[in-house]
Image 1 (tube, rainbow, N blue to C red):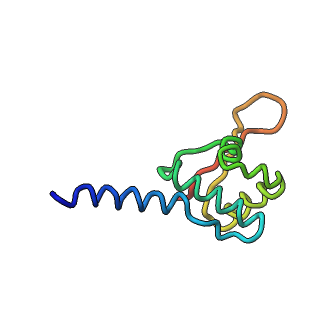
Image 2: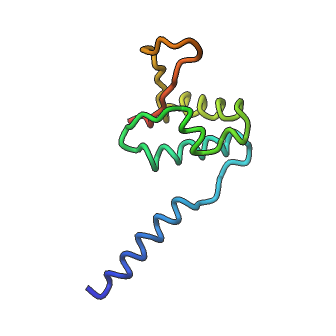
Length: 104
């Protein structure tokens, strides 16, 4: 009973350390891969599909360059960490919408 505030503090401390951990990537694709994977792990861990556009905007990987962001996503797909699905139901002209989720 006396440890309840300490337990809550410890839980907040653990969450803060996972969110604010240093980026291990030394290269731009490494940084982008780390951002994408951490975002999906925090916000779509239940297998929810996230649009690629929303993923890139939320993580700001476009700031590193579009080719870097696409390479990072391709690396995650190649390693089997994430799945990518293309929306084939749209009849609009132009590029098809892509969705990303963590692989189960």
